[in-house]
Amino acid sequence: MMSQTGDLTAAKEPGISVSWGRGEDVPPPPQPPMSVVKSIELVLPKDVVYPAGSSIEGQVVLILNSTLVNPMVKVELVGRGYVEWNEEIGASRDYSRDVICNNKADYVHKTKTFPVEGNWLSAGSHTFDFHFNLPPRLPSTFASKIGHVSYFVQASCMGREHVLAKKRMYLLIQGTSDFHQENALQANHVATPNCKGYWEM
Image (tube, rainbow, N blue to C red):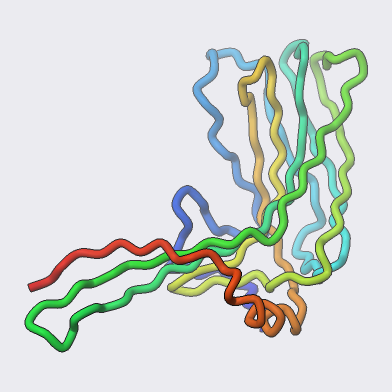
């Protein structure tokens, strides 16, 4: 069963904020005081739960303060999981080692780069339509104290190899019931967890 409410105490993948159904500005590298890009926004239906195998349709709205030459405007669909847990080694002895393990998984990563006529964009507002098909087998959006499964759409604008603006919006995905069963059968192919620990006396 899918959890549609975020847990503020959920384990967070480093550098990732789990905040579903809301847009989020992703800080780009420092830019000159007067940036060419005024804003970049994602337009998606509100409060929608997307079933695995369904389609996502939306728009990227880019507003420029001035002309942008050689622009790259793209949108990405990303789905990933992150889990973190503790393991204790040597607990029956006079000392023990508290080990923190984590693991990651990528479920979907698709990118659409928009064609730009003449390879330049004038000052003002520009709208780009996009469409993504979700894979037929996915886990549901989920959050707990030890991990999460999250999905998001991210729009970005680049100029001369510099990121000028980014916008990210998290999605609610309803997964398929046979995903976990199929995933369990392929457990031998899962990457080895990353574990770090320290000794306690």
